[in-house]
Length: 422
Image (cartoon, rainbow, N blue to C red):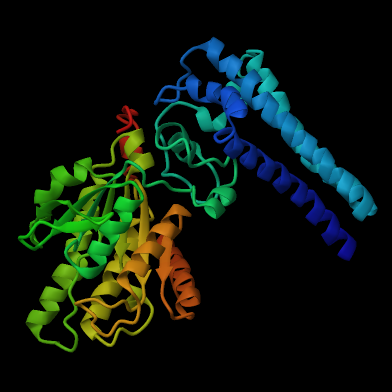
């Protein structure tokens, strides 16, 4: 049994090693000028709809980028075999699985470079044109994920098959140049998020119920943020803003503390649950093109109250309600939906919070760059276990006992056209 486990480990490890070399080579090709002069041909090939600019450039790009990349992978694969030859001689031959795996990349690159008919359709799957059928994948690179490398940010999204290296490097998601609208922007966390988003290169829009424009401090100088005033119940008036936004962060809410009057119940559900749900659904209607599917996202602050007491019953009930609704809606969502599961940070809503809002906002941005779909920031270690388990079982419960909605994406297939990136 031990021998079999070791054999499988070396075989699988050799394939993962090949992918690791591939991803690091790609990353280095964007840093090291001699390699970039070869790699840039790959970026010259495709239009935003992923059709090649010309057959000649398409073929040349494979000779200049894909073939050298595969040869480097093969060289390191042989190096791994040499290490196994001395360290684990009985498993040395199974490490050649990675070399065989790499030969598949090399052969397909040569076939595409030679212009063999059908080679591109069979082997160049992440560059196939046509409507996107899913948002960017979390663990495996799909067409939508790779499109972002070409047309969202060429200094991110480096991975070719698995997204693990991007997650480790914080390049699995980029905020640079994206327009981000934040509700509850005048609150403690709202301001901290705006500050962090601006620092990450995003274009920020503050959505607030207040009447005063929001101002931040950047490098010792006042920075006036584009501020839009809105009221709960008038979500439809934000349609034009959401149309232009790449990311909507739903962060507004109230905490009635111990109040349990009928008025408090109605107001809590209206603000914490139904208002966010209306904005979520409205934002989904703006996801129409391939570019929208690749770039647009919704982040929802559902709070740690989804799985643990907040010592404010109505706050817990309303936050759990929006949390469950988000879990249900994102089963068929046309774009990425992230949950923000936040512990007790100090704010006007929670003056006894123990975490700094600036630190919490920084952690949110850090985890988003690693493409965490459930962003957990708390001091309670139980939440890191309880929430994923709860989310897994509730999600499957909804899948099994609810009908799949008519996919927003499938409904867009006939009209999905990639526009010029913003």
